[in-house]
Length: 198
Image (tube, rainbow, N blue to C red):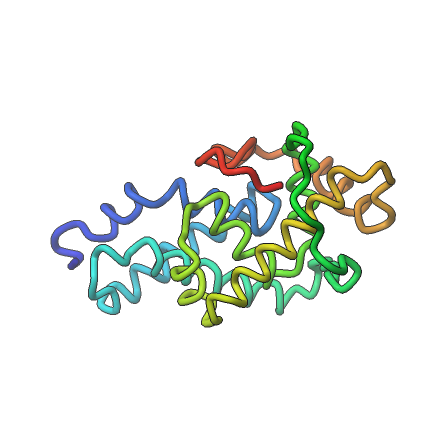
């Protein structure tokens, strides 16, 4: 896939929306998502020769974006994370149907997850990556990916269905989202596939 054949423009046309959605879910901010997406395509342009298999372009772009995000978080030291040690054992399957969840509250809860749990959750439920693709991208065993997905999902279920206040961490995330008057991510209201996150 060379530049002469319009490779970068084809990548942008084919993957911009999915990359933007992923960046939005990671950052929780439309402006940061736009910046991150543009940086990812800029890096892809410089490294276009590294893309050897055109059918792996999506995973390649998602990896570039994730690495940019990780560098940004490490540099900024501003992202609040919540340890999942407090979640405990995973509960059995509930017979109750999943309640309707406010998209803003879902994003707040996702923002509170550590990146190691947030990334597989977003890739699996919102971007339809397989366990294997996530494991390859994160350089983890498939079992670890599955475990992180289950723990992240349990944490979200606890945060979104428990009748309690969010506390200081939730208040900060809520304030950040109130201050973010940017546009929402395309498809931000629900997972694209209809797969239930909770």
